[in-house]
Length: 216
Image (cartoon, rainbow, N blue to C red; front, top):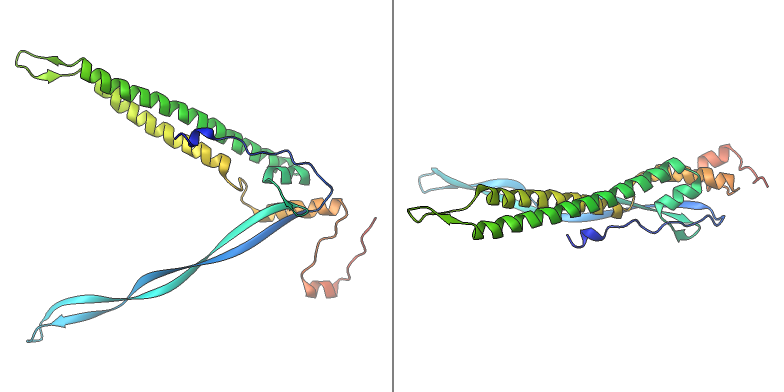
């Protein structure tokens, strides 16, 4: 929880340099090995009666793809919020800023609840051991409110810790708007405005439509 309490907004403020915006998308393939059941073996006694079965397993290799992406101004990687600001998509930039600011607020509120809950728990435990009383038969008892304070403090602390962690995760999320196509569209519009001609990787389309000269 101490590490969750240091949530802060990432450094932003990169200004436009006039270089084109780019989005790099790459897919990484990861493999794993798992055991899969491929059959069963029956075990019989000398009379041919079935006494049991055992399963046969073999290793099988599986794979899955992970898509990662990053935004650049020229050759320099920049923050998503700055990327959309430079691209002129203020709605997306504001969404990212609000998302992160909410994360910081959640982190602070959650940490406060965790501290209050921890204090209530300790108070209930300490006071519960100091205000015990004995009845005429020598049986010890403690006020119910001390147990309630300790139990409530634990619950509040757990809730606060969860909120603090969730807020911390929001501020550290790499892509608050996880949509590389949206970023690519914004980059395309911006690059067109500054006179950068996009690369055309579709050979068939390039043959059907001659490449236009860049206007200056």
